[in-house]
Image (cartoon, rainbow, N blue to C red; front, side, top):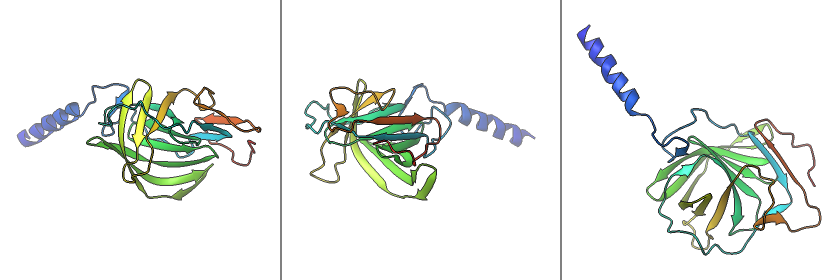
Length: 194
């Protein structure tokens, strides 16, 4: 009985010691939300693009804490991409209804994303890849550099509430301007967006 009591006390101390004091911020090893993302948690289809101008104002890419939320590519590459961080889960959101789901962690000054599946609407397939980025966070901007390849640019990803918020860095550069965004529900890929 004494051994069982000691075991329960030790177990309760371990559980209490595992809490995260940085509420709302996750360093890749903690999970402040307790729930994982689904591959089809966000649907996005757009003809808008980010600004391809090189990022010259990035801070030193020495890591840091990444607040949970939705980050849209704004500068450094012309594309429509976003990242949704929730606990240990990350969703790479593509601008043509396609997503890639995985987990993330911090390894020194690098963010390591390990993907598990890709989806197009509710159709999900295995997709096992690992991506490694030098990174930094400054204000509402996440700076990423996939430094395993010399010619990869530094990219600036800004935290947004909606993927269809146009600004000077992310906007329509073509004649068929459209942006459709669905959050917190499965999305229908049969609907044309442009």
